[in-house]
Length: 444
Ligand SMILES: Cc1ncc(COP(=O)(O)O)c(C=O)c1O
Image (cartoon, rainbow, N blue to C red; front, side, top):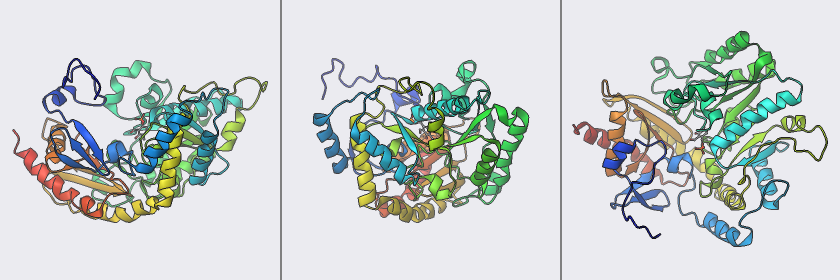
């Protein structure tokens, strides 16, 4: 314990993406993390059904990663990445490119998903400029997209509460595709909905409106995660790829959630058989033990920057902690564990149990939709009339009493269990949600 003149005081810390006043009255304090469970300060033991924040697929307290990080601390604790190199970072970049089955690609390291997104957007604009196409600055995101909290990410993102206060500060010239969710057409679909491929044609409309010569890149999450697990309609990502290729627009997949096995393939790009020009990643790359993110990019994007005198920096961008040795060590250990324990295949094999469990909720009063793909799923609750988000919050809190930690966004509950979770824990989620809903409905 660190010394603190104000023991048990929670006043000084402002938590991210947290309803602060509600938290002050209903604090939810984590004391310990044990494999696939958290133990709260009040003693409640809860199943970590969302892998922390979609980021700990190997569970907590992973010995191999912990040992690698401990060793690293006393070996090279920090190595500057500007004009200097550190061998394990090059090795991890190569491993990640191979894991993505893009052996010729480059990898640029950052520290978070938000930084990965802003980096990819800058690369896209810089790439076109370097090729003499400087008018291509427009970026296309998608409604209901989440791309982190940076100014680039919220500009291309499509979550209204994250954007509304900052509209005058966002990147100019951004436009958005419509989101791909339609409850009337697709409610309770397992996997990819058959309906909705035509929504990708909206990109042709935006190209018609703005002209391809002004558009640098399109960025989408292959499966929108944070706004409630929205799998892409069959054929949708393929169609986006076709349109981007036809018009010289770069396609970026934001795989901060889907990367490193969540869909039962190394990346969503492989799961869907669609090859974007760039992939952003973070979270699971280190099992979240030490922050690390990055961008995987096609070699021609990198090559376009390589002009001018060779002693000058080609891409004036980076972070003090890009390729931090501690994160690199955690990344190697996490990739070792994924491979040696065959965990991507395990994620795939558990996905049926997750879907069966969650879809068994269909027909439960108060549940409006269930969606699932790979080892991720979401449940939409019917909101309390006039009070959006309140039912979700009550169910989220009540679920902790049922031994379940779940991800809450408005009235949507999301789950993405660790790949090392027991099937029995996964199969229990539906009854825990039902019990939480019943308890929440008793609250007045
Ligand atoms: C798709 C996607 N992109 C970017 C981010 C931002 O990542 P970070 O919170 O590490 O900045 C997230 C976080 O959930 C995400 O889901």
